[in-house]
Length: 330
Length: 284
Ligand SMILES: Nc1ncnc2c1ncn2[C@@H]1O[C@H](COP(=O)(O)OP(=O)(O)OP(=O)(O)O)[C@@H](O)[C@H]1O
Ligand SMILES: [Mg+2]
Image 1 (cartoon, rainbow over the protein chains, first blue to last red):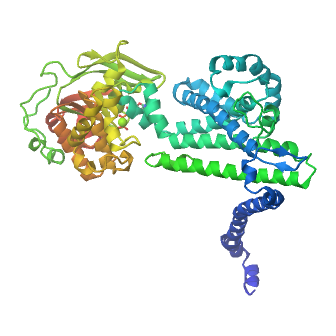
Image 2: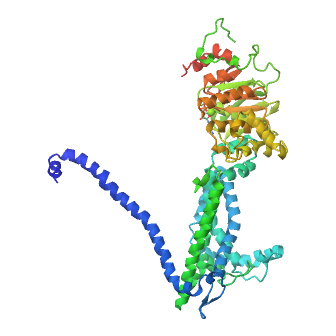
Image 3: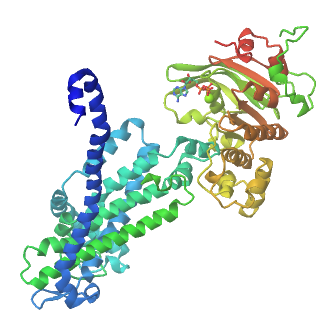
């Protein structure tokens, strides 16, 4: 309090001294508080989310228990619910997506970082990055109008003729199917896997490439024996990012997967995913039990995502031991 | 060549008599022992429009150490990387003339790059081991180039690690990543890795610049040891090092070879004023 009149008397000294003081104490404290609040908010929100899912699902959890996870019935009229086909569909469609997308995106990333002419590297990477900005409903429409007709008339019959000895490629061909959803998911996650693995490959020091080349490796051998192993944990990270996208993707999947609560061995058969079922049925659910079952599904989706991510992180951790790139790439 | 009657003394450089490391043969000039291992013929090199090496012509003698010295940016690394064509990756490079390694043209279109690079090993300024085990680092070249049967790899790896004076330090940690070794150990690992490829010529680009004095000394001893079996070309900024390890010294300036001769002669009575200015630190 006594300081105030003094400041008024010597405006120049106060003018230069006071703001410094305030910046040091008050400003920093406010900034720190805001940041801390922000950092605390996220786990708290997550906690509320899980709690909300849990309370919403309590009815279904009470009635079906863990049997919900192993049952395949989905009968809103009889109020009997089981999520196995949904879990199966979510995991399988994502798996199909990765099987298609990982080799392709890695191939493109390797081509762009190691082999492509300098002038096309950046433009192509930019264009592929743009693919990530397309709304998923557009992918869904494109899938319905372009992809499915092509698949139904040429790709699926070809697959059935050549690989038909596998149960995966048997049975009637409808169009909307697990495979169609997997393919659209693959197209959607490719930009992510491609961009991230490209960054990771770019981060591999040139001294590594030179070491291999100077020992007589061809450029291809250099990539396979040196560059990719050096970047492997980062590449796994890229794949996990893609997997995360695929597991949660809703719109495009529900437009192409056929939306049937069934487990089929054939990829030509329609299926369903957890997120698609929630999106489709939530607004139409009438009974409390139906709503609660959907909340249970949402809760399971959360659990599956966490488990998959935890497993993947464990994988990175194991792989990155002994690798210079280590977990840094993530 | 000028031979002054009383050689000017440069005690700083000759203080450690390299003669104590290797008995000095009678005076000779490069090329006297038959055809040189590396024969540079009117070789010029440019990055795009920037001319970096100008009409180099000289020979590098087999089973000897040739040091290349010269101010920063004069093209020493470019020269080394021309011998194993590591510059190929850089777009827009141009060259004229040729370099012969053991009688084979480096730049002829029919040159087998894989064979050339197996024949000409390289050790880089910064140790660059692969993030693989110590064993796999050394075994990389031979297994890639199928130099030995798989079952003979352990022997070869041990031999090369011994040659690189690293065996005792790593024999119990062959499975550990090479990147977990100390800097000096990593550099010796890189030397072992290069040796495992059974090269004839070994190029070393400032191999000690990232090392402490103790590690530097070990690598220098190693270089002197290795010249019994290999032709070594070493780029260094360290005059004492050039004086200690090399038989011949070449002084590069602005892309030209100013002079090349026996190390003792070059350091005690340089034929060229620029050389003298450089080695006495009055350069500029
Ligand atoms: N990739 C490149 N593209 C264009 N110019 C280059 C490239 N690499 C080197 N140069 C140029 O060529 C010249 C010689 O470079 P170089 O690396 O051979 O020099 P150096 O003698 O090894 O120098 P230092 O002692 O600093 O290592 C320098 O002027 C450098 O700027
Ligand atoms: Mg250099």
